Image (tube, rainbow, N blue to C red; front, side, top):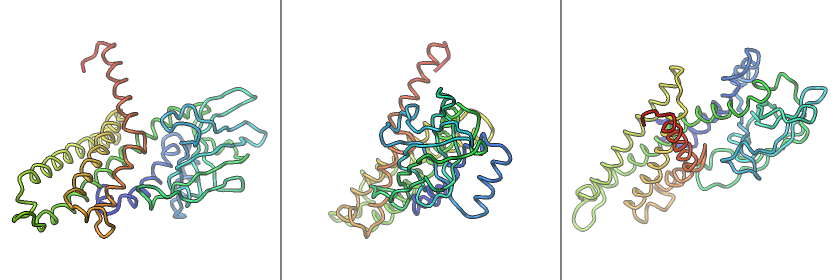
Length: 314
């Protein structure tokens, strides 16, 4: 992911989104569901989209979502609108988080695997600041009927499964964001070596050396955070906290690094002939998606507060 993103972050993200969208099935699906919704989908070289965020509900408050899946004789009838659906324009399968209702009673948040079918309407791809190559349309579900086979996990298990899915996505997302920093430094080094200002190259300016050295040190720290989260996940250990920390610091570094390197390029940094302007646009989007940086900070405070009141060390 990091290597791909150092060339084009949206390309890496498009591939990673397929993995992230299918995570609910991978984590909580039955063997038959994994065969149909993962193995068969991949064999057909098709995509899945993860449907969480809604237009009228804050993306940081997914517990308040409005999409509904109502129990009916054939299984479930799902209605609602989801926005910023990664890969939504090309997806043949949507993993939809909705509020299940049984006999008029709230049965809790639940995931459903919904094939593209009549009743599923996909809008155009919006023009975004960054990650423009990633399809993120609004997808509307209008009385779409699915069977019990399409429910992923138990009724009411969606909140926990959503948090698990977001943690998994943040591991890969941190690697993609790290790749943006790698690419930006790769742009910067030849430029500072060649660009002459006031009788010497930028590389010979001590403040430029200090600036790039600091970014490189922070890059190594973020790499270590990301790999720790990935290793803990692979070993079956808790990793949500580590994934949130990695994503928080990776996105902050990406914004800082690309901002500083655009400045080193001067006017060339803001024209399309130089790749750093694209990296800057992609980087600026990263503190917003997969949970804003403020949400990561809030989660960390809650963990700190809980540890303090349990009498645990900090």
